[in-house]
Image 1 (cartoon, one colour):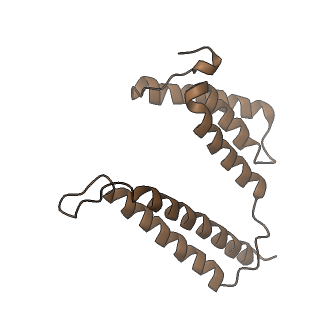
Image 2: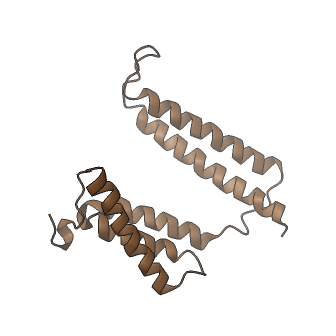
Length: 155
């Protein structure tokens, strides 16, 4: 399979993902008051941005289809699954486990997406990013997140 064909496959997949996310956010944002251009409501910007994302996704999808994408061979499914898994870990664990353990787990799961990742550097990276997250978001910005959540005996 040529490099050009792989690029087309990625265009189709990424366009479909962008379009799907744009549709979902548009549907969620329509529940908010739109207001007008002169007096924008809380739903105006989210709807505008999600429609922009949807348009971008459709353009990328069409580019891949019109250039003759030949299926989805060559898509790194292991990496895709690792990134989606890390996002799900964050979504479901940040309040219960806390920011530190959640970031640590996210980085380790994301490292599983690469065949080049090694255990010791992955653990060092995960610990470093957990500390950086604490320094940046809890200490620096003062966000109301706990470093260790109630699932692990924190507050």
